[in-house]
Length: 220
Image 1: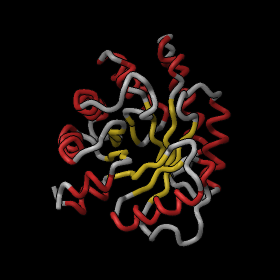
Image 2: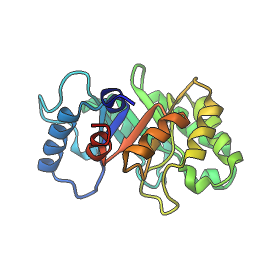
Image 3: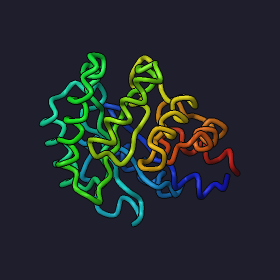
Image 4: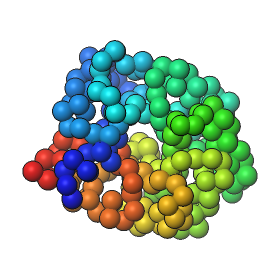
């Protein structure tokens, strides 16, 4: 895969809770050097300083992160404030307790609540914690709820859940379920070139990575 093409698929990610403003500034500089398509930072680090990123590099942030255990209205308010502060993409975590209870209608409703706070053309990505879901049936149901709620992407993982991150099987299943109607973001545990390329080949249209430099250096 061409290095520049892969770079444009990457959401270069720094979500460490102790990341300082100075580290975020350095991170933005690295993103510029690497030519990634987007960066993803915690909402408390927005807005970014003027000129921190070149034009064409999207700014993403997270809401309800990392547990998902927030009221839908809280997630929506967090998303709206993030957009006011310069985010153009929102990655939200679904309520895993609702998923565990099989309450898919309520999962869809909370996604729709956040969607209402994230107007087009802003992207809404829904994090389903695919490793925790375990069964194909629950992964499919989560993708269907995300689509019905108005998401633009389904995303595998926060990278913080003890169950783990992205897997090739989950990415392929998610891609087959949304069938091009939504994008698929693979995130969590993608630390080398081979894994990144394999995720794209499995159907990922975006990659969430903190090891972006190492991944891209593998392509020369």
